[in-house]
Amino acid sequence: MVAACNRLGLNGVAERKMYSRDWGCVGIVKIQLYNSNGAPLRSDIPNRKSLYLLLAKNIKESPRTPREEVELPKPITVQTAPTSEKAIKKKQKKQKAKMIRA
Image (cartoon, rainbow, N blue to C red; front, side, top):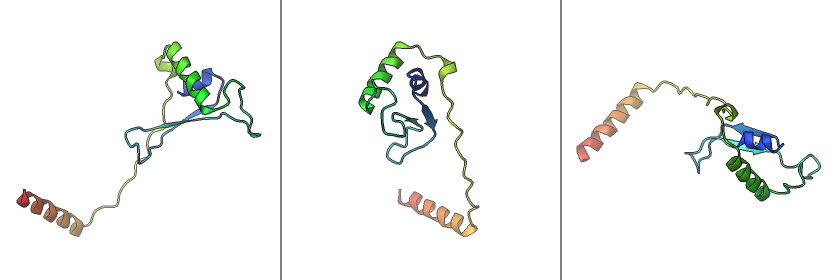
């Protein structure tokens, strides 16, 4: 998507974000359509709908090569605090009770 935006002469940036409603899709593309005055950067792309149509046409017509793919930044890993023995025993007790019921 970013490569297609760049071919159209628009500034596109890929970001690694994930939304709770669509957790299976990681990554978004931000595209600058308007300048600081609020006027469109290109007169033939006045809104998002026309951008989507041009992007679809551009992507369909141009072959994608591995060199054009944009690499997303690596995800941030979060280390969790060590779990207390009490919490571990509680979890094991729950699992054991679950197995007995089943």
